[in-house]
Amino acid sequence: MTTAAIYARVSSQRQKKDQTIASQTAELRAYAERMRLELPQEWIFEDEGHSGATLMRPALERLRDLIAQVGVDVVVVYAPDRLARKFAYQALLIEEFARAGTRVEFVRGPRGDSPEDQLLVQFQGMSAEYEKAQLMERYRRGKTYRVRAGSVNVLSGAPFGYRFIRKTPECAARYEIIESEAALVAELFRRYTDEGASIAELTRWLTDSNTPTRTGKRCWDRSVVWGMLRNPAYAGTAIFGKTQAQHEPAGINRRARLEGRATPRPARTIGRPREEWIAIPVPAIITPATFERAAQRLTDNKRFAARNTKVPSLLQGLTACATCGYGYYRTSTRTTNKKIYYYRCLGSDDYRYEGQRVCTNKPVRADYLDTLVWDHITGLLTDPGLIRTEIDRRLEQARTSDPARRERARLETALAKASRTITRMIEAYQEQLITIDELRSRMPDLRAREASLRGQLDALTAQLADRISDSAALFACGDRALSG
Image (tube, rainbow, N blue to C red; front, side, top):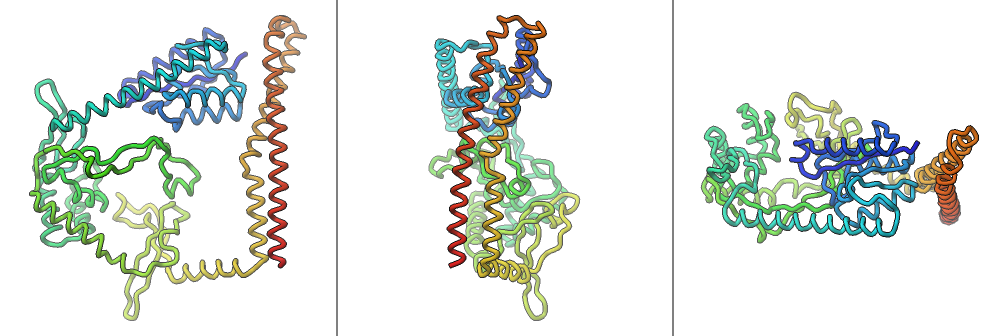
């Protein structure tokens, strides 16, 4: 029986909230049942709230891994624009699936492999890409027009101290001051500008006041207070267009890198030039003069901060905790005779987390750890035997972790599966379970797939042989250099 997987996608959060993907999946299930396709429950892939303008989608990634590792006969998609909004991405995915012996069928689209059907798929892909670009441009121009008209509706949220009143048929969207929170904001700026309180002191003061943050946390972070002091909305001017999103993978953080996982963010946010910012008038909590004084002090703090005059340590910004994954920062304590520096884990600070610390590791003396690492590095550089051992280890790691070897294993698995399928077809004909016409209709595709897999496997084997010879030559050169 023909095996199948289905893929469904909705773009917006509103569609996700309305569960429109359920109806899409139901229709795909019904199509698979009508076509008598074998559909395992775990082969249903849904991307809710993910744009079709990017390939960084969790369910799509799992589908591509499944096709590459196991092999699927058919992938059923509702329409070409559900697979991707860009024609180039559609062509890339269809070609990738075809190389693995998987065909793509659209419920609302062409279903054949004729040149006319392929041309129609291309037209639909270009139409979907054009429609996406047109919608984004209309949305951008509409938001820009409303912003220049003074509407806060495009902001869709309010900072601490305000309540966002949504647009209604009777009145426009607006900011409304929350008196209890506004009093804290005014006191925050007064303490920072008049009394010279530090951001750490302001953070402790807000936490001790038992006032929750805008997100409901009881423990305030320094970054939140720092952001409030830089927010011009408190002086009566909200800013639109400070940042913009770029559809490219964002860099993973230290914890994700140490755990060997990727962050599911298909876009990253970058700042826009100040001349492109658009100001929107909102009710003010503090005077513009107070805000300017706070901004000037923030600038002076950045310029004259004590960290800018310290002598950097050897491992500052490079060490990470093996228990929790957070980075180590340098701190110090003073004795009667000298000042001692330590590396301390961010996860071991109680004040950073609600409840209690997330790590129990103790601080490490900076001078001890710096000396240990420096002696190890210098010893490695002066010992040819250690260098040769490291070269051997890295060559072995390169051999075992080579993507070409994983691809070879996948091709061997797929080839074995294709061979078993051919054998089962012949046995089914011998047992008179299928007719000779059915055997003749299916056997050419199976033979072609088997031949294609054998050709890919032979090419990959030759490529691996070339790499092994190159690595051996590199090792021989390194060995001669060490001997000399």
